[in-house]
Image (cartoon, rainbow, N blue to C red; front, side):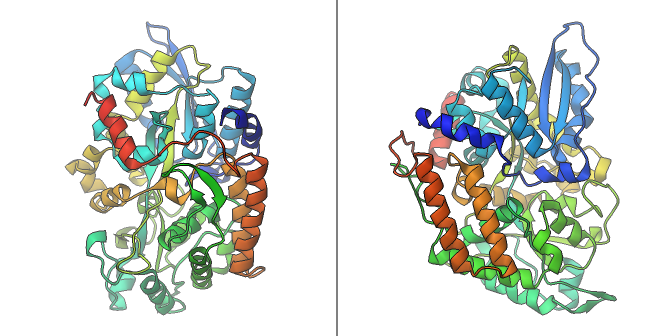
Amino acid sequence: MIGQNRIYRRNLLKAASGGAAGLLAARAGAARAQEATPATTTGETIRVLVVGDPFQFALEAVLNQFTEQTGIAVEMENLAYDQLNARLATSFVSGTPDADVVTVDQMWNGTYSDSGWIVPLDDFIAGDADVDIQDFIPEVLYSLNTWRGQMVTLPIAAYGQGVVYRTDVFEANGLEAPPTDAENAAGWTWERYREIAEGLNGTDFEGTSLFGTVVCGAQPVPIVHMYTQLAASFGARWFQSFPGTTPWDFTPTINSAENAEALAFYRLLYELSPPEAINYVWFDAGTRFSQGDIGMFYWWTPYFYLTKSDGYMTGTPSVVQDVLGYGVLPKVSDDAEQTVSLGGWSLGIPSTSAKQDAAWQFIKWATGAEAQKQMALVPDFNYSFSDFSRVSLYEDPELQEIYPYLGIQLPIMQQGNGKAVRPPAPGYTTLEGVYGLQLNQALSGAMSPEDALAQTETLWQNILAGLLLVPYSGESYEDTVENTQALMDRLAGG
């Protein structure tokens, strides 16, 4: 495995996959540096690099609380996803210190950890009773933060996926609302989702012509994030055996009957979406729903609150703010297993940092229950942060009052498996780029779903062989939620 790092490190310097809102910052022009909090008597200052995302706005609003509590000043800089990825890779490869705390995408964990670019957090967690590691949702830590049996980061913003719909449109058309409990969701299938969208498509509601739904179609990254949730629900998987079973086998299985069926279905959903959705990135779908001409859509859980505004983080109420409804994802059939995509952002400590103890204090604080609650209570931008990874926050009555869907969101997170939906394989960025292009071609009708997937698998096979992953002779690890829970127990002293 270590011998392969030289090959796939180079891939980090290329355009990379995004978090749910990674490109949002670039499109919204949100990249900016925050002035350092005035130095305290300790004189210690740490540098923190964050990605432009809703959590960044909330974190900035409460950042002074960290300095007041610890005496550590913070210089925080906000970067767009691709800028952050390139900057971190350049810093790590050159061995040049750039920051003390960095935002890490779950897809970077393997490379960063195996290369020694970030330090494991196990010793920090085990030696600090304030962390309360057992308060974290195991499925979140598994999906976002563990690699080869170690906790390499901690989550600052975690996303699942669910359904957002207009309650007034459903009521006016006599439609049963999407279920809020996956355990009691008989009949809530993807086919039923399509039937509802088709029934609403082209109808008039209070003078507005509706689209049934909306999808993301832009390649290479946005379409992968939305489509892979659907494909996972249909039973599609990327590899023969990775990461949950051993030995690891990176033979691609992307060209499967399940995936072909899912891609054909995704095309049907596109036909019920605005035509320009072929070019929609992450936030385009959410903000389009906010304009009032979409019946329902499924997407990352941050859009549960982002749809309250008329645009990304504008804070101006949308026309649908008072008629937002939320539900769980459909399944292929009542007896099918559901796999919910989990994504988000985490914080790690670069091995080049000379202030690792202070960096840990920041990570512990920023991912802690109290700071996360204060972030959620920021009224700016129409209350726009509920991406919790701690169970206690979902059960907080004050937060439930502001974010009434928390009772729906928690089970969604607990049903998640981000490593099954988008496996964090070495060379992920390159694989995703190929996949996104082919998915876009299938969506536009330039290729059939079958041809798009066949071409994807051929290209993947060549890429994986070039990375020495097919056949794979490196060390494997049985990467499961159960092993993550065992790690949490050990770190908690259990």
